Image 1: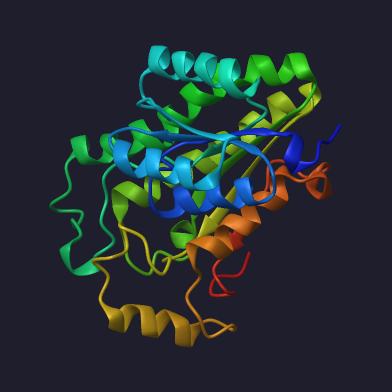
Image 2: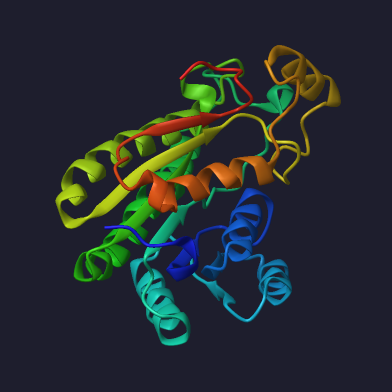
Amino acid sequence: MSRPIKDQTVLVTGAGRGLGAAIAAAFAREGAAVVVNYRSSRDAAEGLAARLGDRVIALQADVRDPEAVAQMLRAAEDRLGPVTTVVNNALADFRFNGDARKTLAQISPAEMTAQHETAVLGALTVLQAAAPGMEAAGFGRIVSIGTNLFQNPVVPYHDYTAAKAALLALTRTAAAELGPKRITVNMVSGGLLRTTDASAATPESVFDYIAGATPLRSVTTPEELADAVLFFASPWARAVTGQNLIVDGGLVPG
């Protein structure tokens, strides 16, 4: 079963700014109803929703909190209809600056756990809350945001990369369980994006190096990656599940 994007209600977690905001804007552009989820970026999320139109709303919830997530989904259904599509984009506070990263000797278990709690357990919480409604409708699309760093750890961000690798494993096991219920589960993995709040600390020389190393001779933008997310929600991907699509201008082979 498939639905046009314009007939979907899409929840994008961590969508108040950066890549999440670009993904929300891409779905709104294609006519979907969109929930802009945020944890603390209220002004940015509400401003984005206002710019994107009447079928876009901003709702607060920490994805690590099951009750907050359940309340968000109820509010979304009341205002836009049942959520059919989820994009797991929420990210614990992180800065992509290789010079300032924690090495293996410095990083703590708490820092490793913080990334895992948001990227993996947060995605699980949202999935558990949204999947029953998708099953009842006989249609669901779940897309998680990964990274090309677990194929190519050119900068070893241990906490971030390990969490995203675990999220890929969850993507594939969830796809196996939810497939018979007509719910697909996929991942889109970017590299360094030009530019988000998380990548703003990256030196310009690093952007230039990456651009020169890609076949497209450019660093992927949030808007370009967002369009790849749309593919997995679209009717054209109705037979695709458990996959990880790398969107980084060809830097890392799939």
